[in-house]
Length: 429
Ligand code: GLV
Ligand code: MN
Ligand code: MN
Picture 1 (cartoon, protein in one colour):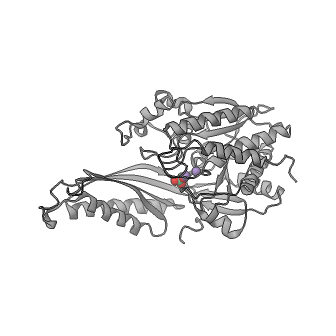
Picture 2 (picture 1 turned 120 degrees about the horizontal axis):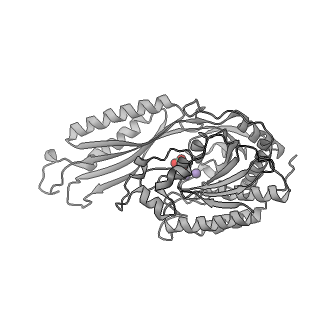
Picture 3 (picture 1 turned 30 degrees about the vertical axis):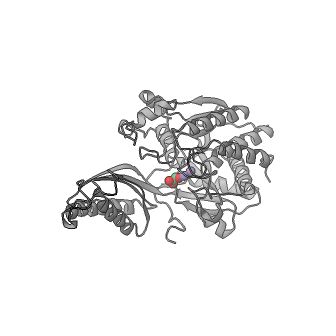
């Protein structure tokens, strides 16, 4: 039996709707991309909600929004929760958002019950979890884990600015980034998130306990050909950068066997119907629960792109923007989540995450676990993304209860990146 009051679903629904109103009206869905004025305004509103819930607020050098509820016993290591409130272009209203607004509601429940935690409880709205215009994801949690480096800050976006400049423009301090880094030794990190896949819905189970998070490798390929007249240049004499990109995309698909890989962005220049494309930039990623598969993909794609460049007389310059290893959840935190679910009368389902999360980086600082709630038809990263408010409420109740259970645990060693993660259900379907 839970000792806590249930979440106020009307209040949570209202919060979700209000945050959804901070959206880019010129873009589809509920777009609120990191570094946009819509994201900045949304996060200012979130800061107000954190304060109203009784959290002491701070914004760090990586522009993470951090709210703290001090613990009674001043024990070392905090219990940390949270997620992100930025979205992909054309995204939905729940990815990341449920983990931030849900954490704020969990704090309200804990405070309403007069629960006195031994550990500090910290809620973070991490900056920019989704891949940004510079090709990098998890900017805020990367910085907290000490993995946002000078090279990352030099990544250049389509407007010619670099990531460091974008960070400064949204309130961060790129020159003082080291200050955003946290020491290892968290009591634990627990993130509530929508599943973004079909497993829970199919199994008709409202709560998932994450066993681990896939590894992700991201790359950009810059392809250089030659601009020529589209009417007078014979087909055999062309050095068409777009055709090189098309062949590269097919190579990514072919090499994805046994994992998943995607080309999600392509830019072609000069971009005129009557000019043979001279340059193309292609952004791609591959994911797997197996580090070895990712190594294999990386080697094979490098070879395949080299062969495409030679065959078509194109310059192919490949850079791997990020390499994130698969991360297993910490068994005692996963057990605490399962116990919390049972306290709500729910037998949870264990599953791996095919989506990336801030939790992957927070796992470098201490024990990590994630609570999943179902996604309708498994849809996500699209306007149709939907999770029923009752399921969100269950997730929040489980999160709050997990915090209570973890607060009473002695703690354990952090998982190490690169460990084994169970196969991701549904990836091969
Ligand atoms: C984050 O949403 C990701 O998995 O790309
Ligand atoms: Mn996402
Ligand atoms: Mn997310």
